[in-house]
Amino acid sequence: MSRNRCRAWCLALVAVCWTAGLRGVEAASGDADGTYTVTITKVETSQDGGTTYQTIFSGSQDINIASVSAGAVAAGLASGAALDVGTYNTVRVTIGDTLRAKGYVNNAGNTVFTNGGTDGSASSTNGGVLNTPGSAYAISTYTIPAANRTNTTSGLSMVVQVGKSPAVTVKFDTSGVLSVIGGGVVPGAPLVTITSS
Image (cartoon, rainbow, N blue to C red; front, side):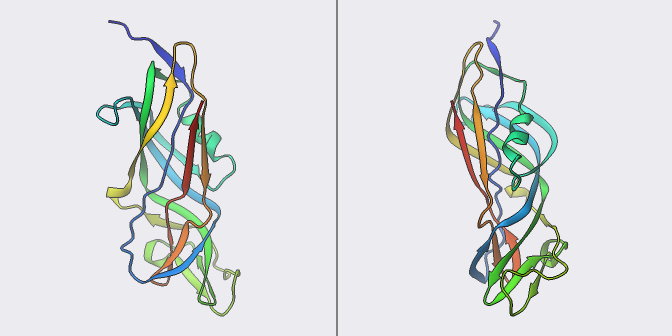
């Protein structure tokens, strides 16, 4: 039996899941300063709430979701993917094992900033000043725990019809994604908005 297929230009992307053993959380947050990069390794979509999936991207693509062009890069991943006709309600995204971020957080009269290090050594403090990262201000690398590298988004309604591909828009908001935990900068999940028409 042949199935009707159409080309879809779609992608519902990443809500970066981050679990960091929340101990000593200070009440401060900061924005990503132009860099909040993850590597997308797989994007799958489902018509049956996640019982079965169809892969629309498999590979390795870095996406800086703090960039104004992030939505276009994300959409390009699924460009030309052939999807079965129907309504898709779930998307599953798998990301690589690292996140690269740059930014700072004002906390208790200090600026805590990314310093180019990795994980527990990824931040420094510029004491006694606000909004002023130190001279070591750079992109830091964070390891994403294996259990947090796959994110499933449900409740979508993306309709694929014969001869008509849905228009899917993905927007990312990285404001407030950085927190201070245990005295260091820790990245959190960005706000992801997905619409389809």
